[in-house]
Length: 270
Image (tube, rainbow, N blue to C red; front, top):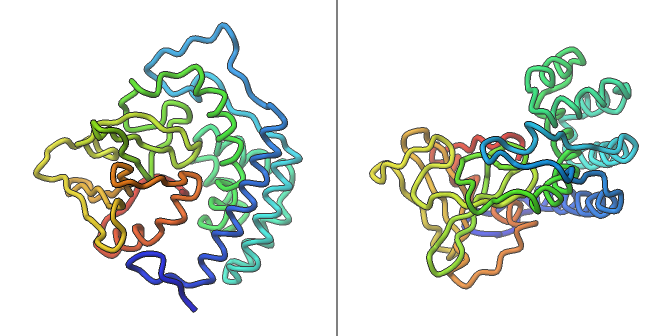
């Protein structure tokens, strides 16, 4: 069974999986917010050059993180039976390995993450998805506290001023048509040039274009012919009032179209 969510018909099972994922994420985001895990030290001053994570590390609650992780594995068990072997290994992971994976992922230490996953003989796609989805709500509360101390309107870099990761979606707002990138990890939004590739920085207008989706006005793909990357973009000037918390899931069809045309997005695990 499939459902038409745009110009591409998606399997109902896939939509149900992402609905379940969203429910889990929202449930634990509320719990994490209650913990008030993070606050920026009063004496800290942003250097306006490096993302916050380079000087102040995000925090997690080990018990809540493992609880969230286990619920994600239950969801994967229901919808991804082909991942059963890796899911079983993740369920039996020691607290030390779990903690090391979380810390390494938060610190952007891809080499250590890969090393642990390889040693445990777990399919990388499965482990990285589960760890990313576990870390994501913690990163979001980290960003919510940090954004009060960071000037996101004048950052203008192609990586997040909070956690240093890249965007997978953007929104265009206001009469001037300003483009805001949205971090794939912590959901921070920051201003970025309208006509430049957020992956490689290319600003040659002849090699930049966008693909309009006739069936879904206001939604498009910004593409770069230099690095063959794409960015999903919502043009709020078209009268749209997108729910940015669910926009990534609601625009899966844009990812499918982009991949079919040979483009990729470099935002890890989003």
